[in-house]
Length: 195
Image 1 (spheres, rainbow, N blue to C red):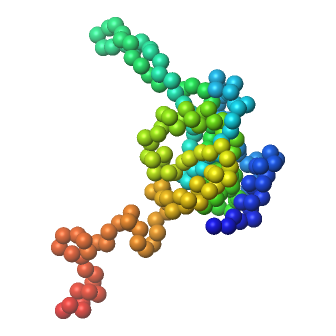
Image 2 (cartoon, helix red, strand yellow; image 1 turned 135 degrees about the vertical axis):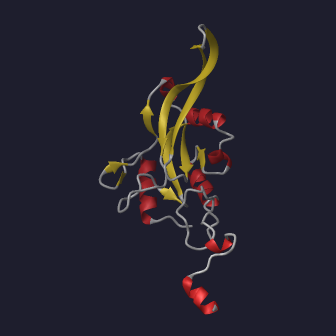
Image 3 (cartoon, rainbow, N blue to C red; image 1 turned 90 degrees about the vertical axis):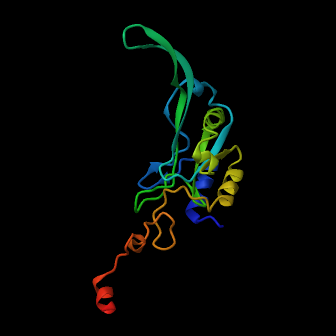
């Protein structure tokens, strides 16, 4: 599958470290950090390119388990473990775009590519979410080599998320015809023909 001119330009701009623009002069999002944290200290290390075919994208964040005291009925408290956000939160772009605007991330074979995501954050998130449906169903994956991420996206181009628009013909999610109802349903013209 050949890349379009816009995809090639966006990828070339990302490779050169230049600011690419999409839509009305908005910068191309490359692993945009939403909230900083302790993990930001390691952000100078290895980076990955994340391929995501979910329309809305994903916010990558990791949690650590901490013990807290919880009040119980009747007085007193008990110690419980709860998940607390840890480190940076990074926005991974999805494939949805506004009508009439260019995508903020290059799209290859139905996957939006987000560059410059901290590898340590990705590895921690993947470890915590390895059993998630989006990981098991190949909706998101990352590679240090941008070309490998593009190849992976092309290999998985036919993967469906279940969030695609309904197709008019042959879509298994489409409601069944009313004729499947008990007793059958006919129209007035069918009734007139049968008499």
